[in-house]
Amino acid sequence: MCRQTRQRVQVLATIAVGAVLIGSLSVVKAAEQRIDFTNLMNVAVRGNGIQKTGGCNGCDDATAVSRQMIRSGDGYVEFVVGEPYTFWMAGLTLSDGNVHFNSLDFALRFNGNDSVDVMENGQYQGGDSYYQPGDRFRIAVMGRRVRYLQNGNVIFESRQSARYPLVFGVALGTMGSSVRNARMETNNRAFTSDGYYNEPDRYTRDSFTRLDRNDDGVIARREWQGSRGEFNALDNNRDGVLSTREYARLSGGAATGTSGQLIAVNPAQRWTDTGMWVEAGDMVTFDAEGSIEMSGNNGDTATPAGSRTGRRAPDAPLRNQSAGILIARVGNAATFAVGDRRTVRAPASGELFLGVNDDILVDNRGEYRVSVTIQAR
Image (cartoon, rainbow, N blue to C red; front, side, top):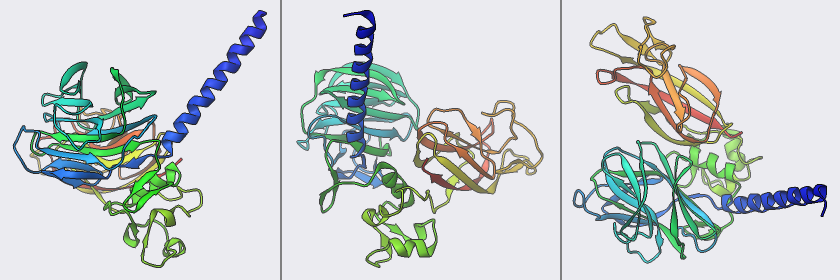
């Protein structure tokens, strides 16, 4: 075989492999869904996550499992860490209802000291890493191999092969610890309370989730961001709410954004987790109001647009911006200024966080109230 022919064969093979990978990913994406937790013990459901509310502090007596499961092939579970210095474990495990620290097949262990590692059936495997609240973790099954990722980076690959079916199991030790924004992707059709059905496209699902602020599975008129006429046109059965199927009739599947509810930003903490997930390229609009005090000096106040005196904080996240200005970041991407109103294109995919541009936070008082609207790219 001549050199040119061999190169052409290699290129064609690369294209073919790429097409197979893209096809496989599209199958997985088609089944993305927020987790429906069951077998709840000493936990409360908080939106699309859970929190330990009872039991013994430090014991693995606060547990839950997902109704969704990976029955075969590829898939993953993904979640966000809620608090620092908490002890708990979460991961993929065989669907036998046995959820304890030592029974999870493929789990991440959060050690209570801002470190995380990999545990499989109670045995330490490695993957030691540090984390902070808001970090996103994923446990993915790819070709029966299991990989553990933190903010998109692989921290460990299991030496064990996956067995099916796999559910997401959580065992919380520290009182008040939580798992947030939990999602699964499987090769199955999406699970609902009345059976399985083919979900709408990904952006339809994501924009529906963002509008459904109270997580009751429907969009009420007060949550709707469009006109009353648009709402009525989609409300096929005239019951005053939009189901996922009715919402999927929206042309393009992603014509509206989020929120319908103000997010309170606490100026005494570095970041406030909005509970919203954005994709790189989404258009994000912020509308903010409120005022804060940034020290014991009653005149040292700010609005979302920044300090009323124009002062700056030398060790704030954005030193070239006014102290007190509303700031944001997506995942671990760079922090950017928001102010009282701004529309930006999301620089990355990830959880959306809001904060206040100040260097000393403990003496701050008041709050900003922010409405966020996300328009899918």
